[in-house]
Amino acid sequence: MTMQDVNTPIDAADATDRESWLRLIERIGDEAGYFEPLGARHWAFFVDEGPQLLVTFEELGAIRARPGQMPLGHDIARRHGWSHLCIIAEGATWYRDRRVWGYFDRLVDDAFFEDFDRTLFFGADMGGYAACAYAVAAPGTTVLAIRPRATLSPAVAGWDNRNRAARRQDFTSRYGYAPDMIDGAERMFLVHDPAEPADAMHAALYRKPFVTRLDTRHLGPRPEIALAQMDLLEPLIESVARGEMTPAVWARMWRARRGFGPWLKNVLARLTQGRSRLREAIFCRAALARQNMPRVRRRLTELETELGQQGIALPPVLPPQE
Image 1 (cartoon, one colour):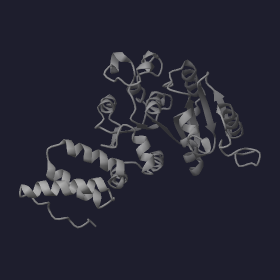
Image 2 (image 1 turned 45 degrees about the vertical axis):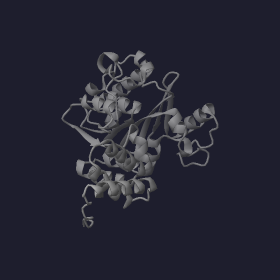
Image 3 (image 1 turned 60 degrees about the vertical axis):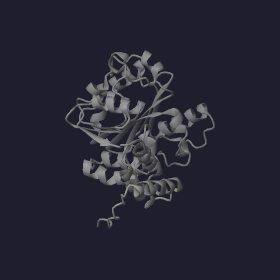
Image 4 (image 1 turned 90 degrees about the horizontal axis):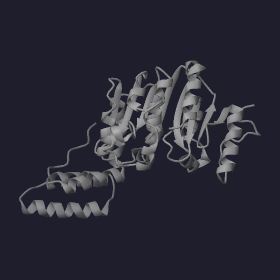
């Protein structure tokens, strides 16, 4: 029997509450792999489909908010015929639970990851931290982490005032300091907005030579959400999973920001705070060439008037590059 059999649901869309969701996801897991509780606030959901494995760390509320109420990794893996392991957390646990540690210890003892030709660990924010922290269990893996923390231990990251309640958890013992836990990885791709100070400081702690930074400057504090809105998140994961991601590939993908309203507004807000009115006007003109933004149009008119009074004209528009 497979996930496509008539008696097995293909997703958890019919779930109406937490308990019905757990029952549905357990049915899917039992038929295609397994669904295993890891204490009271974590679960392991595994679907065995092919020789490539996608490991994701996702939060229950975010999963249930998605169409079909299935993990993001499940939808991607199913589309490509990959196996998928999702470690699900309920709430801001930061995956700091001895049962989660024990589960990964068991995977190591069983040589679980050796059964796969290629493995990718993926997560964002809390999940990004976990993807790095638990990557040590799968030597040779690739890691894709979006704005991962290094640790929430106040002794190391006391400058980060976010998630203060989570600091009480143990970040100093097993699978604790994430930058050390990626030692056995083959590659790591770290996505963050370097204009966000706290995220940039955490990113700076990942210093291994195999770490490639994919900057999302001015995309804001939740780049994973913005990337999804730009239809870039899943292509990013797929490209890294296939071993195709390079800085040049990312540069081509990142061009999509030029037509993304929130990014344009973020950049304009920064330019407005700066001193160069000419630079701001040039950017306003470029933004209007991609989107109809009335406020930006009014601002451009103001800037052209101000610059004109100073005897400064905007340079001519360059023809598009071939």
